[in-house]
Amino acid sequence: METNKVRVESDLLGSRELPNSVLYGVQTLRAMDNFNISPFKLNNYPLFIHGLAWTKMGAARANGKLGVITHECAQAIEKACQELLEGKHHEHFPIDMIQGGAGTSTNMNANEVIANRALEILGHERGHYKHCSPNDHVNASQSTNDAYPTAIHLGLYATHLRVIEHMESFVAALRVKGKEFAHVIKMGRTQLQDAVPMTLGQTFNGFASIIEEEIPNLRHAADQLLTINMGATAIGTGICAVPGYAEECTKAIKEITGWDIKLAEDLVGATSDTSHLIGYSQALKRIAVKISKISNDLRLLSSGPRCGLGEIELPARQPGSSIMPGKVNPVIPEVASQIAYKIMGNDVCVTMAGECAQMELNAMEPVMAQCCFESSDYLTVGLDTLRDLCIVGIKANEERCRRHVSESLGIVTALNPYIGYKNSTKIAKEAVATGRPITEIVIEKGILTQAELDMILAPENMIKPVHLDIKQLDNLGYEE
Image 1 (cartoon, rainbow, N blue to C red):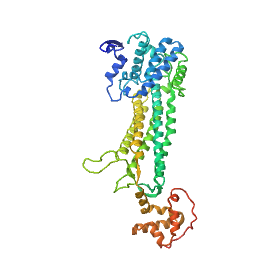
Image 2 (cartoon, rainbow, N blue to C red; image 1 turned 45 degrees about the vertical axis):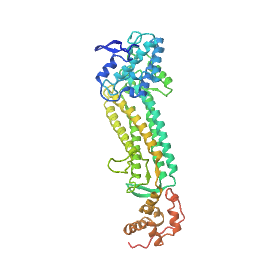
Image 3 (cartoon, helix red, strand yellow; image 1 turned 90 degrees about the vertical axis):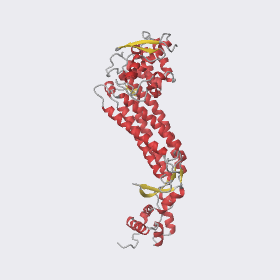
Image 4 (tube, rainbow, N blue to C red; image 1 turned 135 degrees about the vertical axis):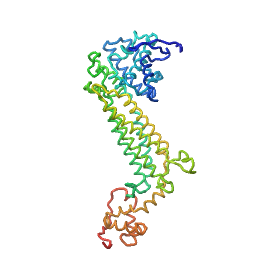
């Protein structure tokens, strides 16, 4: 094709020249003029383009079967959509994800690209829309108000499947550390104060568990995306669609994707409701909160390294200061927390936009889509970065962990079942006043034998419920 050739297309507002080298048309060109808002372009989100392709392919298959468009036209549209699924022509989706018009620009961008490619497949030149029109053929039986949200749902569900894979890999890396550190005894802390002993392995298994339990929650939220409103057309009444189209289109998309696609029971309600996007965004936010919690803990546990806790050593990734020689910062947990903040912020945007539905449509879906896709991508990258550049390389400072346990007042808690809370408090108070270890005071006063103390304070007996055959004492002889 000659790259210097132009073609003229027209719409409601008049005619415009376009390079004949582009597959998009006049309405995409207007969107490029109108919405130069953000760096987030449609072609930055290939799985959203896949969602558009699945939607248009399903519609073409249904329209062809019902005689709304010719069999030849339907086949050409399907082939054009298949090329999009193969990663071709994505450069022809240059419009901003954030746009006015409730997604009309995105829908028409897809319609125009698919129509022009279908024309070439049929042996016609681009722009000769009487043979295959963006509106009359590719968009047959549709409105932006059913095709656009359906494409968002499908594209986001495809993105979700990748997120799950990365979550599972992240959990597996934490489990490896949990096993590696299973023998390392350390102090647990509540409110940043010494609490009771535990193992470093329990810490990392705890991290793994709180992420792992979010996987079914995220899957549940994603399953809601498989309900679509194709056939609703403008407001849910199905105007401009033939009887049976909604069911045939839903069936076709189910066949194409292999997913359990369902038609919404009430198309009027579904067309204005964006709660499925809100639910998925909130599920991502829950994970983000936990990722930031883990990152905070890693920074605290590695703090120092000499004047802080210093119980673990994070992989050194870069010099930490332009003025302080030898300083190494926990940069990977820091960036993971910042990613989490972005996801949380996006959820606020999605929630506010979801609340803004008016009458039979929510015109704010474009920013909701951008936020959900961005949050999904951020979470994927964040999980991989934290796993590969931090988690897998963490080392335990075993000696420091043991010393913290032996010096801590927290071990007196382990004595509670045998000498009582009041007596344990008195011992702890004396330890604070004298600076002496708990164990030394207990042995000196003959409260417990060395053998009994060793049994009680054995790591395996402090990190899980146990029953020890040790006589309980009622009074240690302290004065009230």
